[in-house]
Image 1 (tube, rainbow, N blue to C red):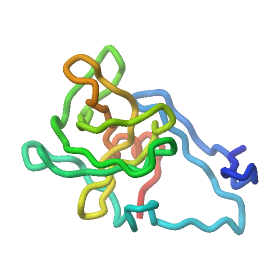
Image 2: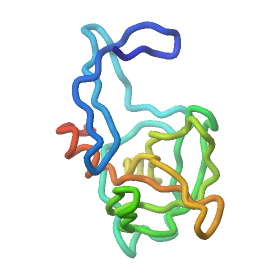
Image 3: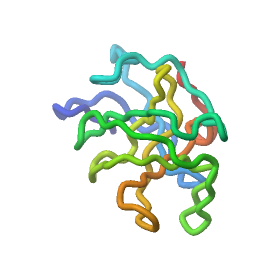
Length: 145
């Protein structure tokens, strides 16, 4: 069962995966409406793959459950972290907090690039790891329209 922030049921988990990505798809109950608007960011226009080298230095943003709106910059694209089963990871310089996991990474054009999955303290304390949206959507057999 999936509930909103007031504890009201909105749907049920329809599909989940821990293979290549850690994500779930929710089948919404009848009568539940959604919006493509992300608080303080605006409407999402769809999704796209992050590109190397074109997206290096690209300004991006998230709206985290704990932190609210955060802005950052893409530092690396298509990085593999085999120890954590992460492929084609997008690395962003951005200070997130616990509870922000799963937040959508959105570019200046309103396209989702990935979802926050973790942090790397190997080089700097503000490097955050995002699973590419294309991998997540493929594993869940769904799309962002």
